[in-house]
Amino acid sequence: ISIVLFHKLKHTFLKTLMYMYIAVNAIQINECVYLGNDTSDIDCLNHFDLSFTPFDSNSKAANQSKFTIDKNGGDGFIQETINLINSN
Image 1 (cartoon, rainbow, N blue to C red):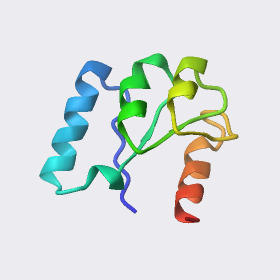
Image 2 (image 1 turned 90 degrees about the vertical axis):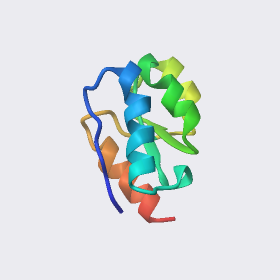
Image 3 (image 1 turned 120 degrees about the horizontal axis):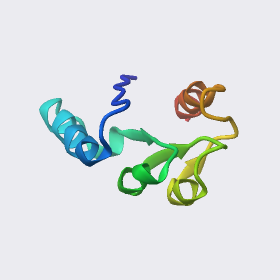
Image 4 (image 1 turned 135 degrees about the horizontal axis):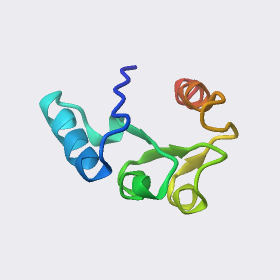
């Protein structure tokens, strides 16, 4: 598993940067996972086949993600998501 974090980037640039990274590294979109928690993440949460939000995320973002993890952001959300992915 390879993890790339695009954290604290302006969200208008985020999707473009992710597409560039995917193309340059010959990664298939179905091999990608998006984790987000706010309305600015909605576009990406909708785009990726695997998208996750933490339990305490903005409700609009949670409604757009494919999965909501039963952990709050900063309280094991990322680790729990990785564990879930690795278990399947």
